[in-house]
Length: 207
Image (cartoon, rainbow, N blue to C red; front, side, top):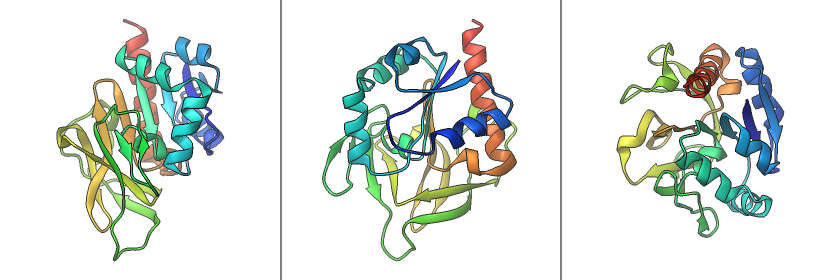
């Protein structure tokens, strides 16, 4: 079972429907720590402000649990704001604590380009990752964001794109994956990515 974390930051049902369309049907939306603890895979989506997301995760009792589950090797997928929260700190109208799973900062896209960045961008893959198996090189994905994750160590980057600056479109650290774009809104290649994550979860559960 894959648990989509409900921490009051939007777009949960669209992510669940994306998984269903990708053929991954054992997916629940939950804010219950015990359900999350029992899950074979965890998804942290989200739309909104870093500060509010950080506060909501802490208030829900899920903050430490997410860190424990990732440390234990439970497959994890962050989407959009869910990727940004992996940073050590978010720099959105102040400084806010992130989960620190991917050490680095969440920073605003530079001036000189339209912000928020909304639309389709092609993604290149600097290294292989199971998450992008079968995804054609140069595939485009749908982005909606004003901030991006800047890792301290770029070796975690598995996807890059550009909007005013070249930035990480996808990262991986162990069994933790994250994407800045919205796979659930990215047509066939986005659904392929969700199917790949479902397969990663199934493979780990069968060990």
